[in-house]
Amino acid sequence: MLALAWANLTHHKLRTTLSALAVGLGLALFLVSNGLATGSIGEVADRMESVQAELLVLPAQENMVFSGGAVFTPGWTDHLASVADEQGPLATDVIPAYWSQITMGGQQQRLFGIDPEQMPLFLGDRGMVAGHAFEQATAFSQRIRELRATADGQPLDTLLDDDEWSAGLELVIDDRLRRVGQDGHPYEIGDVVRVLGREFRIVGVVESGVAGRVFAPIETLRLINDGGRQRSTMFFIKLRPGLDHLVAARLFTEQLGSTVQVQPTSDYGRRLQQELGKVFMYVNVTNTLALIVCFLFILLTMYTFVLERTREIGILKSLGVTRRGLIGLSMLEALLISSAGAVIGIALSFVAQAIIAMRLPLLTVELPPQHLATAVAIGLVGGIGSALYPGWRAARLEPAVALGYE
Amino acid sequence: MISVRNVQHNYRHNGVVESVLHGVNLAVAEGEFVVLMGPSGCGKTTLLNILGLMMSPTSADSVALAGTETLGLSDSARTRLRRETLGFVFQRFNLLPTMSVRSNVALPLRIRGQHADGAVDKMLDRVGLLPQAGKKPGRLSIGQQQRVALARALIGRPAVLFADEPTGNLDSASAGAVLSLLREFHRDWGQTILLITHNEHLVGAGDRVLTMRDGRLHD
Ligand SMILES: Nc1ncnc2c1ncn2[C@@H]1O[C@H](COP(=O)(O)OP(=O)(O)OP(=O)(O)O)[C@@H](O)[C@H]1O
Ligand SMILES: [Mg+2]
Image (cartoon, protein in one colour):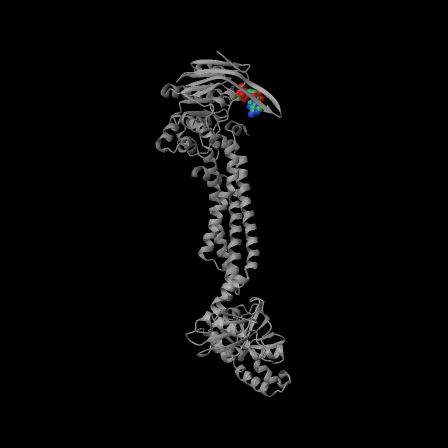
């Protein structure tokens, strides 16, 4: 049977190759788009979860993916610091962040405005690849705070001269973004980048994997976007040691009311995945369609085989091959095609992964063994499935009729 | 070995019914070599297809093969009977073009789940085609192709061999070679043979000659 199936497939090399390619392309599309989705989400989640703080505070009902702006008014830092149980305040550090959307490295980036002095909490055990995590920005932030205390309602940005302004225009980027760079050149320390209508200087490069790909002093972003008012997009909370994260999160929500959501940082990935479920659904629908098309291709190929080989089927029947045997033959051939397709698909996915890593280093394609196994399973099941109808058609023919075909 | 009573068969195309066999009766003893002749279109192939379980008659009182009544048997039972007791040689050879000569001859054994081993080459040697064993059938002369078909039909030692104009496409030399092989096998193995032919030279080959006319058999 195997010999027969093999003989037929090798006799129709072009057709066999094309159907295997079709399956391969379909599976590769499935693997790469899934790999991109999980890879990118996983990467974002890993980065957020890398922050050395146990809780994350976002506005309630805020979409985690697209949130921006700064809805937290100045009082919130103190608010969060004051949440306490019998043993005192829960937070040892309240870490505000101010997010802005910018374009760098030819792609939308989330600019993380943070307090330069809190940079170590974002770095964790990651080191600097080049430069420093801010130079004059610490002094700049100090200066803004002083001004804020004495400004008396005047917009802070009007109180700064140009030199003072430029001290705050520092950026720290991650190594992945550095490598992508601009116009084909990697970023270097000292490069001037125009974002948010200002000329920022790159002063440091950190190892990849930190929460943001781009950091700036939070006070700079507040000056640019909010006239220097002490607003924030979200907060990280570093908890007093020994506190259960979930219990602490609940205490925060209870004491702060329903305008905020407080979640363990380690939950970010799972929740992000949930929120992106709808996006995933589109990806899945597209994938499913692609797979259906490629199995229709096998079905068509097998069906053509059956039509073309009607006489051959008649011969096999005259020799005593049963209906089940003919269906089995059809399935075996389809299985061989789809196994080849699975191998091609997996190979293509790895090629695509390598190309994407080279050309679009900011994207992550994950090809975990579960996905590969799923692809193989889909390939085999789809292959067998698409052979059923043609096989049944072949089995149903009366031998004398089949032999009568030209 | 073969025993049929009152076989009727009609073909139906585009609503027109063509009656081909009207009440065929036939009894062939084990080991008998029967030659069946008759004008073109009289229904010889139709009868052979019915006897070979390749199609079902429109009606019949009995179609028995090797002691088994086949009317009412399931498709798989008919297939098994065909696989285990029947062999076919056709005018058009009906070899599988994608497989080598050797694989073609091995096919009946493979389908039965038996090992082919040396039997295939021995058979090919007997029909004088061992040197061609690795070729595809399309590379052989038509006389050689028919000998491959004969080897394939007989390798499983079927009790009954049906041959439908096996020399119809052959020149007289090739036809002679096929015929003498047929007789040799019949002498050595004693299978029952039903052979359809238009070739007057083959008439003497059998033990008995039947003629079909008007959908019936005559001695
Ligand atoms: N599949 C079919 N559908 C309809 N009519 C058929 C079919 N097969 C054969 N016939 C008709 O049945 C009649 C008998 O055909 P059959 O092939 O049995 O004749 P035959 O004796 O074998 O002829 P030949 O000597 O030419 O091979 C012919 O008139 C033929 O046209
Ligand atoms: Mg005929």
